[in-house]
Length: 148
Figure 1 (cartoon, rainbow, N blue to C red):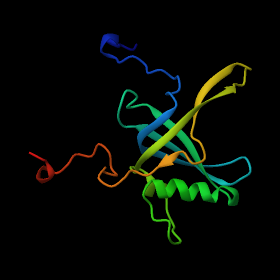
Figure 2: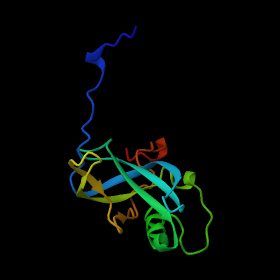
Figure 3: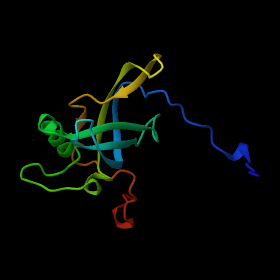
Figure 4: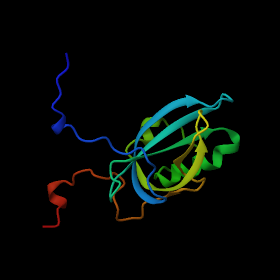
């Protein structure tokens, strides 16, 4: 038997894509996998950190193939990683970093032939957070940094 007090359970969030636009995001998860061609791929999960869609997620992939190297460099640089030298890094090195993510809406056909909508991050759909905005969003400030 299972007992649930449904009035205390929050309603499910919509699975509709967020509107096209630019969102302040934090990279909350990186899953390692491979493409169908056997290239290493990291699945990125960004959480929207402010505004009406705070708490929703944007997904994208980083593919480690010769053809996709420039996009990997772009994403890493926008997440604040040093890209001026050879670098060995792991998924954990990216988690918790923040940037602006730009999304578009695209139509696709699901496996049952139905037309659906989803978010898509364009090739250059990342912007670095400018100075003055913390890299680690929603991290509490130490007491001595409070402005009052």
